[in-house]
Image (tube, rainbow, N blue to C red; front, side, top):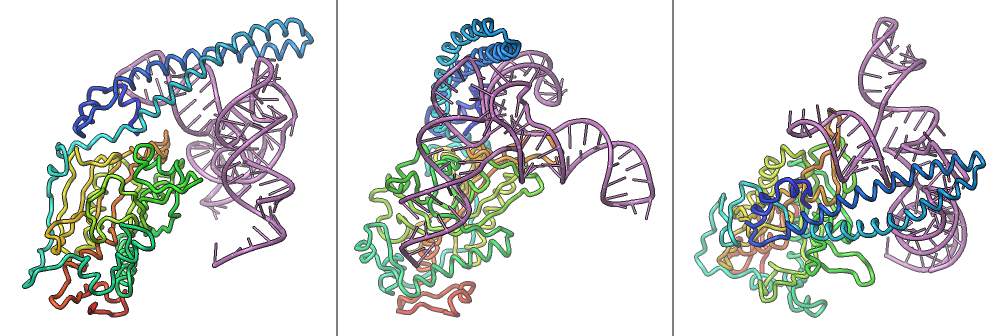
Length: 426
RNA sequence: GGAGGAGUGGCCGAGUGGUCGAAGGCGCUCGCCUGCUAAGCGAGUGUGCGGGCUAAAACCCGCACCGCGGGUUCGAAUCCCGCCUCCUCCGCCA
């Protein structure tokens, strides 16, 4: 959520910056409602002040036994009460309308974000490693996985439907090994605290991180409940500190969590229909940071490095792109995507998304810290990134480490997590 | 699912219709005292919103907030209704 005071003070700047996302937003309407709201507040508060004064007098009169005088005054205040009630209702309506509009206003892109209309204008900022060379035609992972008997799409469709998968044998083991490897790396080497949160969250949590109210159709909702399956661990982990005031000394906080993620993929019909790239359920190890505002862009860079290291240790070639204004997510001020090379599909596939939300989520979720030297609480900055999407990492391993005979070499770093297994053989 | 109990400031805890933002205690901050520490003494110590002042703060004024949302009343932490959360017991269950 944007600060209404910012909109009030620099409306033209806000309009201009938001426009870079490629859409117009009702800033004028918001300003108008804000003005009405403040006028109503003054009227309501004046009436309440008046009422309070009179009520105190009534109390005194009654104590002195002057019941008649008290009665007359009470009648007077009662009449005024009707007007007050009317204005209070009106104020509540205006505030609801204002909040509704503010709730769907996206974050302002950081000044370092390139201006662009869509993903074609994202900018590659980094490359690591080289694509592997094959002396045969590399296959896509779904062919490899089915042939090895470790990915089973047909039976998953029977159990549930499309966009689900069953992992068998070494496939299941590989997925599990990756989760443990990633968690260990982030906990032991990068200093993150391990969290295992609920996989179901309420509406308030989803509002806090920005999925609600605007992106309801992307979520799986439990019937008869105001609960949702988590679309990412970002939601429960960021909301851990909702409505809290943290002492400055505890910042920065680094948390990592494994969770499955559930996404309806409502707008993705016909996209990535084959394989495990786009599933309704997938596993992810997430990184979340709570930091002081002045450090958040340095923290974004180090978060990105933490995620990159997973791919480096696995020996997988990737590139990093910075998302342009038109491709930026709703809550993010700046986002880096890490895209892993997928030789079987001859393309790069997003495997991590690392974002700085500045105080956008902190304001929605009311996450603050109290400065050491005292004074008013301030909003923290929140960041998160995948570290990494596990299913897509399996995809990348299958495609990059495939051999001509259909077997898969296991990256060395994973072998201790797989009982020493070196190769998945047909 | 059934029966009962409880939700007050950073924490404990008093308060059942009228200066209650809320006694008292603990904690914390500042000052005094003191070989050091402890004890003792004094003062201070919530958040949000609106307005004023300001370059901006500090500051000042007002309003709201005693789990959440309604209601009664001139006036609600206190009375009434609904909801949520937690605890205890019983039943069921991984």
